[in-house]
Amino acid sequence: MALKALDIFKLLPKTNCKKCGCPTCLAFAMKLAQKQASLDQCPDVSEASKVELAGASAPPIRLVTIGTGPNKLEIGNETVMFRHEESFYHPAGIGVLVSDTLEGDALKVKLEKIRKIRFTRVGIEMHATVVGVVNTSGTAEPFAKAVQAVAALDIPMVLMSTQAAHLDKVLASCADKKPLIHAATAATLDAFIVLAKTHNCPLAVTAPDLEALVPLCEKARAAGLQDLVLDVTSGTVAGTLQTLTAVRRLALKKNMRVLGYPCLVTNRTVDPMVAVAECSMLVAKYAGIVLADLDQPEQLMPVLTVNQNLYTDPRKPIQVEAKLNAIGAVTPESPLLITTNFSLTYYTVAGEVEASRVPAYIGVLDTEGTSVLTAFSSDKLTSEKIAAFINSDEVKSKVSHRKVIIPGYIAVMSGGLKDDSGWTVLVGPREASGISKFLKTTWANA
Ligand code: SF4
View 1: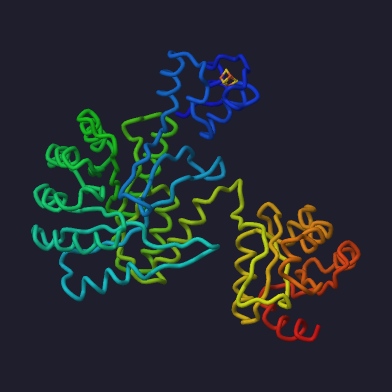
View 2: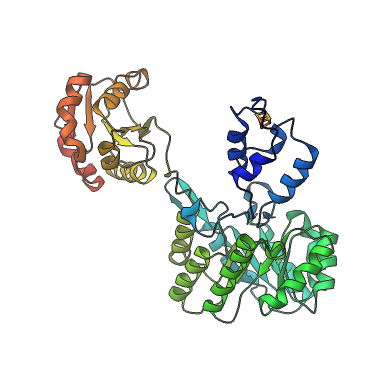
């Protein structure tokens, strides 16, 4: 289990010398506990403490990397059972299964779908982050061809075969992409360990239940493998959820290092909408990779959205940069709208402005990621703040008029803002959906 700040503090020199950049040893201990600092920042920590801290502060669930380069997938290294306790850190890999029985055009169409399904939500692009290539044919040649075609997508791969020889053949040409080898069983573990060590790739291990899985993990660890992934897919989604929860609990609460690895699950439910619901549940509790046959936009989007929402830090609302943004071919005469830096608010406003086809500036105020009404009621969006922004050099250098549009929800501040800024204040619509009409009528006649 991760050490608490006070436990770490007891092992520090307690001289408060500030060499680590923190005002006190306790402050440094708190940063270490939150994984915001590293032990080597304290030059005076004793060797004995280093050994103790390094062992005890190792993450309870190992961070495993699949793939390489900017698209690599990092899973694991989670520290809590529930997101509200702290945060979840490494989003699950959401992947599409590709069978090696697909050939020619059918395979091309499938891969093109995977490549094209992309969504941008609150400014972040979402897409499948892993592909499972399945050796359904049971033969080596089609598997090699499918892997070669999938590798061109430059998305991390899970190579799924029961045959070590087939995997060895494809790994000879793609091991440098660090695919996940899937999956060693009690019968194949020895051969798969050799594969993983020879090709230096992470290995998935699977067994009918946790009791049977533990000795396999022990053996793989004893053989020197560090990057393991546990495939805990069971016959029912309820059974899979139970095992996922048990693994997370045993790793975090019982410090069971042998199960301290991210988990993979495969969902093969035929009804696509049921599959979407099940995959979303699996993301929530606590899959590191979810592989399914979801290759339609309407199927992938809900699962990706759940994944994105769960893996944001609940202590920090998703924010955009506070600055003056231009939408469309703006001129100094273009309207200037004010909003907050809460991502959902900003992108809703920006989307409506874009749809209106009226080029406009959006002035984004730093409200610590809160929405308009929340920011207003907590004094994070005040007339003084807006006045300072619209009279700043940033705005003056781009906007030649002195008319500002504020959200309808803060109409009550219009008088104060006029006095504070000297600008004409136009009260915009309450809801973003009214922006287009407002720009084309009220603004056009202002
Ligand atoms: Fe304490 Fe080490 Fe930081 Fe000095 S450098 S304040 S001894 S933690």
